[in-house]
Image 1: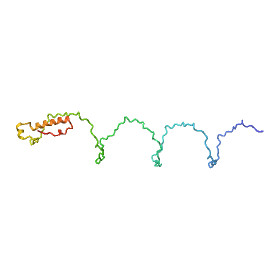
Image 2 (image 1 turned 180 degrees about the horizontal axis):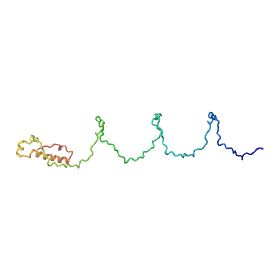
Image 3 (image 1 turned 135 degrees about the horizontal axis):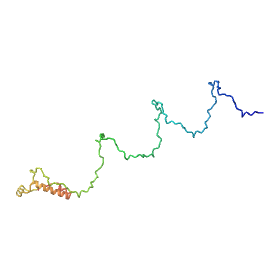
Image 4 (image 1 turned 90 degrees about the vertical axis):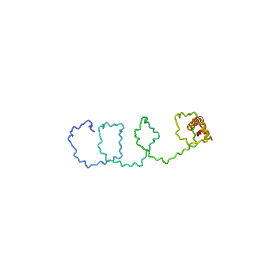
Length: 192
């Protein structure tokens, strides 16, 4: 017959008992290498307040010994667009003292202008210069009449002076040139 001790309680006071066994040399020989933690911590949150924590470590002498020489940027930036608004940007650089040090002394213009024509219409152009007060200060005293008239005839008839004749012919030439710009005979003033 078995006794039922489930309702029995130990009334001894063991609060002052101490374990005097020396376990300092004991080692755990159990193999836990294959043990896995099956607890689900996905919903756990860290409620600690670290806002006032500061990093007091001295990293001033630390150096990055990683070799990045063979690293390449594999990011695809082909579809990136610059959305910055530069419409109000102004160039505040002072270029007043900049000089162009390029040597252009040996540059040549290789453009072929041989077939260029002046298509401007000058047919309605008029000479609005006022030549009424112009005086000819050239000395024509040694000019000779090459039109075939003798000195005797000219002295008898007392024609207009050489200067007056020159001015008259010049004005006639200018009028002719304005009426017909292609006239080649208006380029020389003959004094009769």
